[in-house]
Image 1 (cartoon, rainbow, N blue to C red):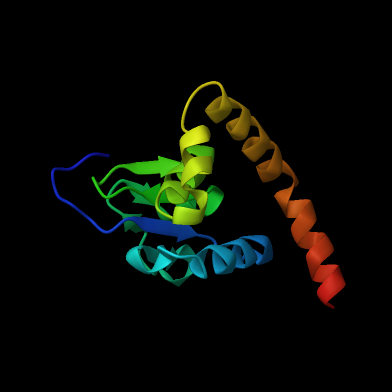
Image 2: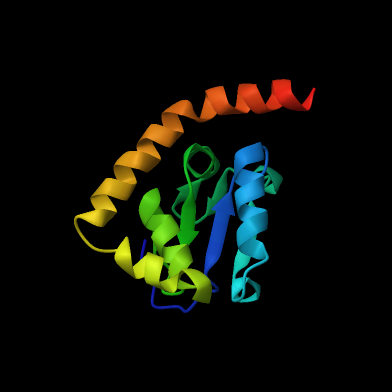
Length: 127
């Protein structure tokens, strides 16, 4: 989705995911994070989290709303986030171009498949 309106770059994350919570907490402690909005999708009561982004979609993978109104998902969303955090800008640039964007996406897709198993392991460890 693209608009002509400037919006605050926004991170949409799954706050019920212990892995996601830890990672987001890490990013929120970084310089530049105060210029971003952080939305735990689980706390949104609406069916649509943002115009063009359904709650179910937002919970299925990582999403980032760019300042130009574009919603980016998957590993490209991480690269977009990194571009907004000075400590990670070089990493964001690196993984924003081929073929590294493709490689990162493959690893991210693999993570999405094992994430439910990692959740189970973490829950057992915490209990």
